[in-house]
Amino acid sequence: MNSKLLITGSLLAAISLLTFGAQARELIQNKGSDTLVNVAQAWAEAYPEVNPEVAVAVSGGGSGPGIAAMINGTVDIANASRAMKDKEIKLAEEHGQHPMEHVVGYDALAVFIHPDNPITTMSFEQLKDIYGRDPKVRKWSDMGVTVPGCKDEIVVVSRQNNSGTYAYFQKTILGKGGKYRQGTLDMQGSKDVVDLVENTPCAIGYSGLAYATEHVKKVCIATETGGECVEPSITTASDRSYPIARPLFMYTNGEPEGAIKEYMDWITSDAGQCILLNKGYAPIRDVKCGDGE
Image 1 (cartoon, rainbow, N blue to C red):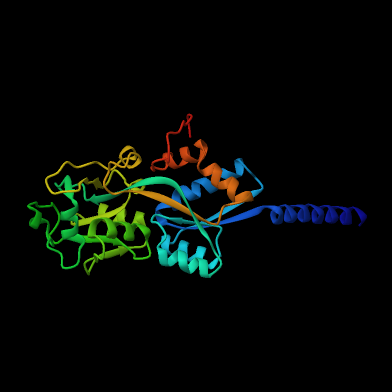
Image 2 (spheres, rainbow, N blue to C red):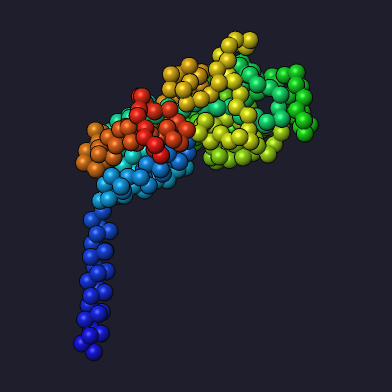
């Protein structure tokens, strides 16, 4: 009986120690951009090797929900593929939050079409003619091409309006005050956009370059019709020669301190930036990455 009590006591002690250790581990809440969610998850998974006393919980949902969580004070770090709007910053201040912007990488917002589509180059004007309100281009034949397996009507794929990718494409391609056409297929995530384009010969869509696969074609983009185009790539995103390159942001409540500061410093270090580079994004500066990083 005594030995059973001894074993039971030992088990309880071990459980207590494990529970205490779990409670002592600091948790950083990180939410937002679908564009950033894969690399944010990779950072979170790698960080325990740097500091096992800190855990990072990552969730996506879009830049809008991430920023809303920052405004409400329910996250430590908000991820965004667009800059916060003035009205969002004002609202945050009214809630006692003081958002501080950190650029953690760069991304090429790529335009994808089906591999069987013969188009290789598109301009801002042509994209606006497809995506804009009262579109001038509704069929691929309007652009002088025939797409095998497609009945000609363009399937226009977009993102949901709480997405930073949606907002950035709108601002860059449709212009200030520009609105999307009606009838777009609005996807929850970047991967959903790529999957739909891959399986739909008539489709066109946009998302972060990191979500590209060999089963979709990346369009070379020109700012002017007939002008020189630039291919989306890590290099052209990094030097900003690609015309739809954009910074990727993380927001903290004021100047980060303690574990949050250490985590942000690591993200912008060579180790963190090499993880970002390995996920298909452009780092914020030149980095040296060893084998396997």
